[in-house]
Amino acid sequence: MGFHHLDQYAAVESGLGHLAPAARVLGTVLIAVAAASLPPGAWLEMGAVAALVVALSRYAHVPLATFLLRATVPLAFLALASLGVLLLAPGATVARLGPVVITDGGIERLGAALLRGGAAIGAGVLLVSTTRFADLVEALRELRLPAAVTAALGLAYRFLYLLLDELAQVQRAAASRNAGAGRVPRRQLLLGVTASAATRSFARSERVHRAMLARGYTGSLPSLRPQPLDATSWRALLPLALLLAALVVSARVRS
Amino acid sequence: MTASLELRAVSFAYPGGEPVLRAISFTVAPGERVALLGPNGAGKSTLLQHLNGLLLPTAGQLFVGGVPVVEANLRSVRQRIGFVFQDPDDQLFLPTLLEDVAFAPLNAGEPRAQARARAHAALAAVGIDRHADRAAHHLSGGEKRLAALATVLVSRPQVLVLDEPTGDLDARARLRIVRLLQERPETLLVATHDLEVAGAVCTRALALADGSVAYDGPLDRLRADRDRLGRLGLLAAL
Image (cartoon, rainbow over all chains, first blue to last red; front, top):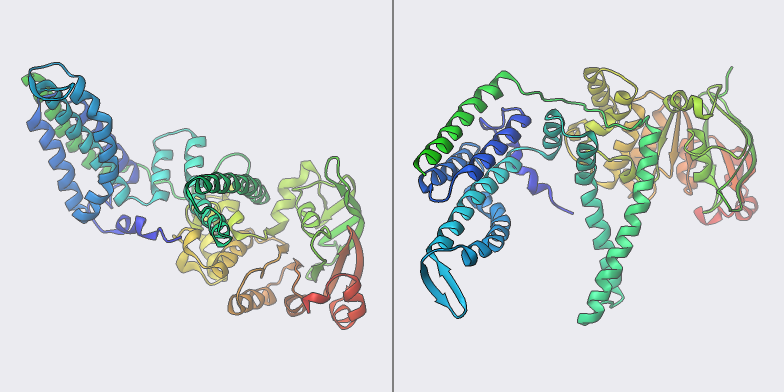
């Protein structure tokens, strides 16, 4: 499988690239928390947080098209999940679509949800576009996430590709025998392929465990390159935290 | 001189199953290069997994560098044996090759800087240090095999045990692995179906049939004896 392109912007030289991965994770969390803390109606502050994310992505040299493309799918999910807010929030009627009433309160809440969620998604896209997966796992270790979680994430990244390969192999083998022609057979084929891939994955996990034991595994995955939060990272995080705090306080005071 | 490997009447059966290994005995001297031959189901992989304690015998004893392979000694045994699995994708499980190769030294308690340096040296020894920061799924089949070899060379084992090291490789990648193995100073035990590879790397053959040692002697003599190769189910490999 060729998924190498997913990592390509992690290697760019930028001010963000020089920060410890844990700082990038913390910065992302700060932006997401700040965006979520803004009250509905704080359009100026919401716009400022969104603009900050876009500015950071430009600073990190993540191409705008890539940034938007990666944000599209989660944004679509966000929009879908936020539709209920549009239909259920009380307020003055703005439009009526059959039995559905759209209120000004609904529009305001939907807009707020999209802007806040969009800023958080943008920050997440920026993080994964500027941080290699291995570094991301290391950052989570650095931030004291449970070892089982970080180990599972590290192994999942490596074996996701193998799983995709195995799925494709089983699918090709089935297709070469003309399996899955027609809607119902195709569904049955999908079930069969999934079951087969799951069985193979269980067998592989057993073999991988043996390979780990053979090299002295004792229950924890030791870290080769810890990347602690250094002074440079703290110096970058502090103004970000202050700026975001100022935006939240300003919005709260005005509301 | 202490033998690199010594097996005394080793037998093994999976729970509720037929015996897979039946009273296997042999000794491998330090520096010896042995091909473990046999058709599918002869017990080769099961035997290999006994050598570093992944499986423990139901009867008999094993010694690696004079150390008995028992639960209490597994750490020491696994530092002496470098086991390269049949499928390199089973052996490369971390996000980057460097982390994969440094896994064993880190587990052995080595400082990170030292483990990192040794991992780079091991990758350089197999000629793929330039891929240190890449994930295994970005490598070719041959490079994965080399990386899997590096994951065990890094521990400087006394014995290298390889399960089908050239399976599924094209001619060029196969040659690369063979040349590398020819230059290794460690004791070698190579399980393979490929008599050509065995002949290029090993001098002694151990052939298994139905879980027992059916031949133990010079590899050249076995390769020249077509009748015996046929009886052992190895003729198709020629």
